[in-house]
Amino acid sequence: MPRLPAPLTLPDQDTGSLRAGRTRGKDPGRPADGVAHRSPRTGRSPLRRGETATAWAYISPAVLIILGLSVVPVLWSLLLSFQADDLVTPSRWVGLDNYRALRQDPHFGEAVWNTLRYTALYVPLSIGLGLALGLALNRRIRLVGLYRTLFFVPFVVSATAQGVLFSFILDPEFGAANSVLHHLGISPQGFLSDPGQALLVLVAISLWSGTGFCVVVFLAALQDVDPSLIEAARLDGAGRRHLLRHVTLPALTPVSVFLLVWQTINALQVFDLVYVTTKGGPLGSTTVIVYFIWEQAFKNFTAGYGAAAAYVLALGLGVITVGMRLVRSRSVRPAPLEGADR
Image 1: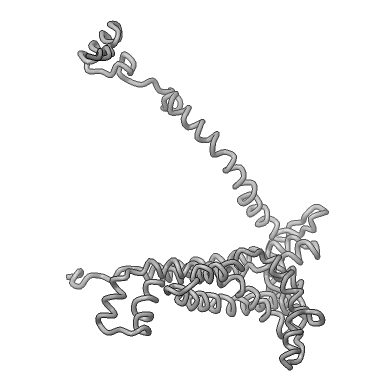
Image 2: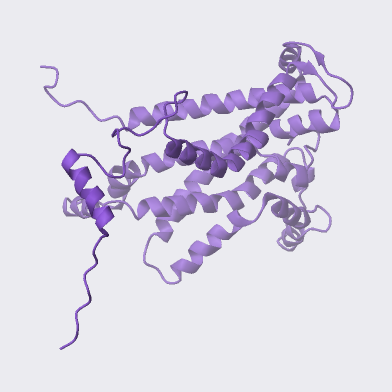
Protein backbone atom coordinates (compact mmCIF):
# COMPACT_ATOMS: atom_id res chain seq x y z
CA MET A 1 0.00 0.00 0.00
CA PRO A 2 1.56 3.36 -1.06
CA ARG A 3 2.38 5.87 1.58
CA LEU A 4 0.24 9.00 1.66
CA PRO A 5 2.00 12.36 1.67
CA ALA A 6 2.32 14.01 5.01
CA PRO A 7 -0.17 16.91 5.50
CA LEU A 8 1.16 20.41 5.42
CA THR A 9 1.00 22.16 8.76
CA LEU A 10 1.76 25.68 9.83
CA PRO A 11 4.45 26.38 12.39
CA ASP A 12 3.31 26.89 15.94
CA GLN A 13 4.18 30.55 15.83
CA ASP A 14 2.08 31.21 12.70
CA THR A 15 -0.88 29.20 13.96
CA GLY A 16 -0.72 31.00 17.24
CA SER A 17 -0.73 34.41 15.60
CA LEU A 18 -3.54 33.29 13.30
CA ARG A 19 -5.57 32.01 16.28
CA ALA A 20 -4.91 35.23 18.14
CA GLY A 21 -6.06 37.27 15.18
CA ARG A 22 -9.27 35.26 14.97
CA THR A 23 -9.98 35.69 18.62
CA ARG A 24 -9.58 39.44 18.32
CA GLY A 25 -11.69 39.50 15.09
CA LYS A 26 -8.88 41.09 13.08
CA ASP A 27 -6.95 40.17 9.98
CA PRO A 28 -3.42 38.98 10.88
CA GLY A 29 -2.07 40.69 7.77
CA ARG A 30 -3.23 44.10 8.94
CA PRO A 31 -1.49 46.27 11.51
CA ALA A 32 -2.18 45.78 15.17
CA ASP A 33 -4.56 48.73 15.32
CA GLY A 34 -6.60 47.32 12.40
CA VAL A 35 -6.12 50.44 10.19
CA ALA A 36 -3.82 50.57 7.15
CA HIS A 37 -1.20 53.28 7.41
CA ARG A 38 -1.88 56.26 5.09
CA SER A 39 0.18 59.24 4.16
CA PRO A 40 -0.85 62.33 6.16
CA ARG A 41 -0.59 64.50 3.01
CA THR A 42 -2.20 62.41 0.24
CA GLY A 43 -4.39 60.11 2.32
CA ARG A 44 -3.18 57.09 0.30
CA SER A 45 -1.35 54.03 1.41
CA PRO A 46 2.24 53.48 0.20
CA LEU A 47 1.10 50.47 -1.84
CA ARG A 48 -1.55 52.54 -3.64
CA ARG A 49 0.93 55.30 -4.37
CA GLY A 50 3.36 52.77 -5.77
CA GLU A 51 0.74 51.36 -8.11
CA THR A 52 -0.14 54.85 -9.33
CA ALA A 53 3.51 55.65 -10.01
CA THR A 54 3.95 52.40 -11.93
CA ALA A 55 0.86 53.09 -14.03
CA TRP A 56 2.08 56.57 -14.93
CA ALA A 57 5.51 55.14 -15.81
CA TYR A 58 3.87 52.81 -18.34
CA ILE A 59 1.55 55.35 -19.96
CA SER A 60 3.87 58.37 -19.88
CA PRO A 61 5.59 57.57 -23.25
CA ALA A 62 2.22 57.42 -25.02
CA VAL A 63 1.05 60.59 -23.27
CA LEU A 64 4.20 62.44 -24.30
CA ILE A 65 3.84 61.29 -27.92
CA ILE A 66 0.20 62.40 -28.04
CA LEU A 67 1.02 65.77 -26.50
CA GLY A 68 4.05 66.30 -28.71
CA LEU A 69 2.48 65.26 -32.02
CA SER A 70 -1.11 66.44 -31.64
CA VAL A 71 -1.99 68.78 -28.78
CA VAL A 72 1.09 71.02 -28.92
CA PRO A 73 1.02 71.51 -32.74
CA VAL A 74 -2.72 72.27 -32.61
CA LEU A 75 -2.25 74.96 -29.98
CA TRP A 76 0.84 76.35 -31.72
CA SER A 77 -0.92 76.57 -35.09
CA LEU A 78 -3.91 78.27 -33.42
CA LEU A 79 -1.61 80.98 -32.10
CA LEU A 80 0.13 81.11 -35.48
CA SER A 81 -3.15 81.87 -37.24
CA PHE A 82 -3.26 85.22 -35.40
CA GLN A 83 0.28 86.15 -36.43
CA ALA A 84 2.18 87.17 -39.54
CA ASP A 85 4.94 84.57 -39.74
CA ASP A 86 7.22 83.43 -42.56
CA LEU A 87 8.88 80.67 -40.45
CA VAL A 88 12.20 82.54 -40.68
CA THR A 89 11.94 86.01 -39.12
CA PRO A 90 10.23 86.75 -35.79
CA SER A 91 6.45 86.66 -36.01
CA ARG A 92 4.17 89.65 -35.55
CA TRP A 93 0.74 89.62 -33.92
CA VAL A 94 -2.00 90.68 -36.37
CA GLY A 95 -5.15 89.44 -34.65
CA LEU A 96 -7.97 88.56 -37.04
CA ASP A 97 -6.33 90.08 -40.12
CA ASN A 98 -5.53 86.66 -41.58
CA TYR A 99 -9.16 85.58 -41.34
CA ARG A 100 -10.37 88.86 -42.88
CA ALA A 101 -7.91 88.40 -45.75
CA LEU A 102 -9.23 84.87 -46.37
CA ARG A 103 -12.76 86.23 -46.79
CA GLN A 104 -11.54 88.59 -49.53
CA ASP A 105 -9.10 86.18 -51.23
CA PRO A 106 -10.50 84.91 -54.57
CA HIS A 107 -7.99 82.03 -54.63
CA PHE A 108 -9.28 80.75 -51.29
CA GLY A 109 -12.86 81.01 -52.55
CA GLU A 110 -11.88 79.01 -55.64
CA ALA A 111 -10.21 76.38 -53.45
CA VAL A 112 -13.34 76.09 -51.29
CA TRP A 113 -15.52 75.76 -54.40
CA ASN A 114 -13.26 73.06 -55.90
CA THR A 115 -13.28 71.15 -52.61
CA LEU A 116 -17.07 71.29 -52.37
CA ARG A 117 -17.43 70.09 -55.97
CA TYR A 118 -15.03 67.24 -55.36
CA THR A 119 -16.85 66.26 -52.16
CA ALA A 120 -20.31 66.51 -53.74
CA LEU A 121 -19.23 64.15 -56.53
CA TYR A 122 -17.04 61.71 -54.65
CA VAL A 123 -19.05 61.04 -51.48
CA PRO A 124 -22.43 59.96 -52.96
CA LEU A 125 -20.82 58.09 -55.85
CA SER A 126 -18.47 56.12 -53.57
CA ILE A 127 -21.28 55.21 -51.15
CA GLY A 128 -23.69 54.32 -53.96
CA LEU A 129 -21.16 52.19 -55.81
CA GLY A 130 -20.07 50.58 -52.56
CA LEU A 131 -23.65 49.65 -51.72
CA ALA A 132 -24.33 48.25 -55.19
CA LEU A 133 -21.13 46.19 -55.21
CA GLY A 134 -21.74 45.07 -51.63
CA LEU A 135 -25.19 43.78 -52.54
CA ALA A 136 -23.77 41.99 -55.58
CA LEU A 137 -20.88 40.41 -53.65
CA ASN A 138 -23.11 39.35 -50.75
CA ARG A 139 -24.54 36.52 -52.85
CA ARG A 140 -23.24 32.98 -53.16
CA ILE A 141 -21.44 33.16 -56.45
CA ARG A 142 -18.36 31.43 -57.74
CA LEU A 143 -14.99 33.00 -56.81
CA VAL A 144 -16.73 35.60 -54.65
CA GLY A 145 -13.71 35.77 -52.34
CA LEU A 146 -11.47 36.70 -55.28
CA TYR A 147 -13.86 39.42 -56.40
CA ARG A 148 -14.03 40.91 -52.91
CA THR A 149 -10.24 40.99 -52.71
CA LEU A 150 -9.88 42.63 -56.13
CA PHE A 151 -12.28 45.41 -55.18
CA PHE A 152 -10.51 46.05 -51.87
CA VAL A 153 -6.89 45.99 -53.13
CA PRO A 154 -6.98 49.54 -54.65
CA PHE A 155 -7.91 50.94 -51.24
CA VAL A 156 -4.63 49.61 -49.82
CA VAL A 157 -2.57 51.39 -52.48
CA SER A 158 -1.36 54.78 -51.28
CA ALA A 159 -2.64 57.93 -52.94
CA THR A 160 0.90 58.82 -53.98
CA ALA A 161 1.31 55.55 -55.86
CA GLN A 162 -2.11 56.02 -57.43
CA GLY A 163 -1.15 59.49 -58.61
CA VAL A 164 2.09 58.30 -60.20
CA LEU A 165 0.34 55.36 -61.87
CA PHE A 166 -2.50 57.39 -63.37
CA SER A 167 -0.16 60.21 -64.39
CA PHE A 168 1.49 57.75 -66.76
CA ILE A 169 -1.79 56.19 -67.89
CA LEU A 170 -3.51 59.54 -68.53
CA ASP A 171 -0.58 61.34 -70.11
CA PRO A 172 -2.05 63.29 -73.06
CA GLU A 173 0.79 62.36 -75.42
CA PHE A 174 2.18 59.00 -74.38
CA GLY A 175 -0.48 57.61 -72.02
CA ALA A 176 -2.24 54.30 -72.52
CA ALA A 177 -5.69 55.90 -72.15
CA ASN A 178 -5.37 58.06 -75.27
CA SER A 179 -3.85 55.12 -77.14
CA VAL A 180 -6.98 53.08 -76.43
CA LEU A 181 -9.22 56.00 -77.42
CA HIS A 182 -7.28 56.36 -80.68
CA HIS A 183 -7.97 52.71 -81.57
CA LEU A 184 -11.66 53.29 -80.81
CA GLY A 185 -11.78 56.27 -83.13
CA ILE A 186 -12.15 58.85 -80.35
CA SER A 187 -10.10 62.03 -80.37
CA PRO A 188 -7.41 62.28 -77.65
CA GLN A 189 -8.36 63.89 -74.36
CA GLY A 190 -6.43 66.23 -72.10
CA PHE A 191 -7.44 64.47 -68.87
CA LEU A 192 -5.32 65.98 -66.07
CA SER A 193 -4.05 68.80 -68.32
CA ASP A 194 -7.55 70.01 -69.28
CA PRO A 195 -9.12 72.52 -66.84
CA GLY A 196 -12.58 71.19 -67.62
CA GLN A 197 -11.67 67.54 -67.02
CA ALA A 198 -8.97 67.55 -64.35
CA LEU A 199 -11.24 67.62 -61.29
CA LEU A 200 -13.55 64.97 -62.74
CA VAL A 201 -10.55 62.74 -63.44
CA LEU A 202 -9.39 63.14 -59.83
CA VAL A 203 -12.85 62.08 -58.66
CA ALA A 204 -12.66 59.02 -60.90
CA ILE A 205 -9.23 58.07 -59.51
CA SER A 206 -10.50 58.48 -55.96
CA LEU A 207 -13.52 56.30 -56.74
CA TRP A 208 -11.22 53.59 -58.07
CA SER A 209 -9.50 53.41 -54.69
CA GLY A 210 -12.07 54.61 -52.15
CA THR A 211 -15.02 52.50 -53.22
CA GLY A 212 -13.36 49.33 -51.93
CA PHE A 213 -13.59 50.58 -48.34
CA CYS A 214 -17.33 51.19 -48.70
CA VAL A 215 -17.75 47.73 -50.22
CA VAL A 216 -16.10 46.03 -47.24
CA VAL A 217 -18.09 48.03 -44.70
CA PHE A 218 -21.39 47.36 -46.45
CA LEU A 219 -20.54 43.66 -46.79
CA ALA A 220 -19.94 43.39 -43.07
CA ALA A 221 -23.23 45.19 -42.36
CA LEU A 222 -25.20 43.07 -44.83
CA GLN A 223 -24.02 39.89 -43.17
CA ASP A 224 -25.36 41.22 -39.84
CA VAL A 225 -28.89 41.73 -41.15
CA ASP A 226 -31.23 39.40 -39.27
CA PRO A 227 -32.16 36.53 -41.66
CA SER A 228 -35.49 36.06 -39.87
CA LEU A 229 -36.60 39.53 -41.00
CA ILE A 230 -35.81 38.71 -44.62
CA GLU A 231 -37.54 35.35 -44.37
CA ALA A 232 -40.63 36.91 -42.79
CA ALA A 233 -40.80 39.56 -45.52
CA ARG A 234 -40.53 36.88 -48.21
CA LEU A 235 -43.33 34.88 -46.61
CA ASP A 236 -45.45 38.02 -46.75
CA GLY A 237 -44.85 38.21 -50.49
CA ALA A 238 -42.17 40.95 -50.60
CA GLY A 239 -40.02 41.03 -53.72
CA ARG A 240 -36.38 42.04 -54.06
CA ARG A 241 -37.19 45.73 -54.40
CA HIS A 242 -39.39 45.73 -51.30
CA LEU A 243 -36.80 43.72 -49.35
CA LEU A 244 -34.13 46.27 -50.24
CA ARG A 245 -36.30 49.26 -49.40
CA HIS A 246 -38.07 48.11 -46.24
CA VAL A 247 -35.62 45.60 -44.67
CA THR A 248 -32.05 45.96 -45.95
CA LEU A 249 -31.66 49.74 -46.25
CA PRO A 250 -33.15 50.52 -42.79
CA ALA A 251 -30.76 47.98 -41.27
CA LEU A 252 -27.85 49.71 -43.05
CA THR A 253 -28.74 53.22 -41.80
CA PRO A 254 -26.07 53.43 -39.01
CA VAL A 255 -23.37 52.17 -41.38
CA SER A 256 -24.48 54.59 -44.10
CA VAL A 257 -24.27 57.54 -41.71
CA PHE A 258 -20.78 56.46 -40.64
CA LEU A 259 -19.63 56.19 -44.26
CA LEU A 260 -21.17 59.55 -45.07
CA VAL A 261 -19.18 61.23 -42.29
CA TRP A 262 -15.99 59.28 -43.03
CA GLN A 263 -16.00 59.86 -46.78
CA THR A 264 -16.89 63.54 -46.36
CA ILE A 265 -13.99 64.13 -43.99
CA ASN A 266 -11.60 62.31 -46.34
CA ALA A 267 -12.86 64.27 -49.34
CA LEU A 268 -12.44 67.62 -47.60
CA GLN A 269 -8.85 66.70 -46.68
CA VAL A 270 -7.68 65.44 -50.08
CA PHE A 271 -4.12 66.58 -50.77
CA ASP A 272 -1.59 63.93 -51.79
CA LEU A 273 -3.42 62.91 -54.97
CA VAL A 274 -3.61 66.56 -56.07
CA TYR A 275 0.03 67.17 -55.17
CA VAL A 276 1.31 64.21 -57.18
CA THR A 277 -0.88 64.64 -60.27
CA THR A 278 -1.81 68.27 -60.99
CA LYS A 279 -0.11 70.52 -58.39
CA GLY A 280 -3.39 72.43 -58.17
CA GLY A 281 -3.57 73.09 -61.90
CA PRO A 282 -4.31 73.54 -64.65
CA LEU A 283 -5.30 77.18 -64.02
CA GLY A 284 -6.19 76.39 -60.40
CA SER A 285 -9.00 74.02 -61.41
CA THR A 286 -7.87 71.36 -58.89
CA THR A 287 -6.63 73.59 -56.08
CA VAL A 288 -8.40 72.26 -52.99
CA ILE A 289 -8.31 73.68 -49.47
CA VAL A 290 -5.52 71.51 -48.08
CA TYR A 291 -3.34 72.16 -51.13
CA PHE A 292 -4.06 75.88 -50.71
CA ILE A 293 -2.93 75.65 -47.07
CA TRP A 294 0.29 73.87 -48.06
CA GLU A 295 0.94 76.37 -50.82
CA GLN A 296 0.51 79.38 -48.53
CA ALA A 297 2.56 77.94 -45.67
CA PHE A 298 5.47 76.23 -47.42
CA LYS A 299 5.56 77.74 -50.89
CA ASN A 300 4.65 81.38 -50.32
CA PHE A 301 6.06 81.32 -46.74
CA THR A 302 2.94 82.90 -45.20
CA ALA A 303 2.54 80.39 -42.40
CA GLY A 304 0.11 82.46 -40.36
CA TYR A 305 -2.18 82.86 -43.37
CA GLY A 306 -2.05 79.13 -44.05
CA ALA A 307 -2.79 78.33 -40.41
CA ALA A 308 -5.88 80.55 -40.56
CA ALA A 309 -7.09 78.65 -43.63
CA ALA A 310 -6.45 75.37 -41.80
CA TYR A 311 -8.64 76.45 -38.89
CA VAL A 312 -11.42 77.48 -41.26
CA LEU A 313 -11.28 73.92 -42.61
CA ALA A 314 -11.20 72.46 -39.09
CA LEU A 315 -14.26 74.51 -38.17
CA GLY A 316 -16.09 73.23 -41.23
CA LEU A 317 -15.18 69.62 -40.39
CA GLY A 318 -16.37 70.10 -36.82
CA VAL A 319 -19.71 71.51 -37.94
CA ILE A 320 -20.23 68.62 -40.36
CA THR A 321 -19.36 66.00 -37.75
CA VAL A 322 -21.64 67.49 -35.10
CA GLY A 323 -24.46 67.82 -37.61
CA MET A 324 -24.12 64.21 -38.70
CA ARG A 325 -24.13 63.01 -35.10
CA LEU A 326 -27.29 64.96 -34.37
CA VAL A 327 -28.98 63.50 -37.44
CA ARG A 328 -27.90 60.01 -36.42
CA SER A 329 -29.09 60.44 -32.83
CA ARG A 330 -32.50 61.57 -34.04
CA SER A 331 -32.79 58.72 -36.53
CA VAL A 332 -32.06 56.01 -33.94
CA ARG A 333 -34.11 57.59 -31.12
CA PRO A 334 -36.86 55.12 -30.09
CA ALA A 335 -40.44 56.16 -30.66
CA PRO A 336 -42.46 56.94 -27.49
CA LEU A 337 -44.82 54.26 -26.29
CA GLU A 338 -48.50 54.77 -26.92
CA GLY A 339 -50.28 56.00 -23.87
CA ALA A 340 -47.05 56.89 -22.08
CA ASP A 341 -48.26 60.43 -21.49
CA ARG A 342 -51.59 59.38 -20.07
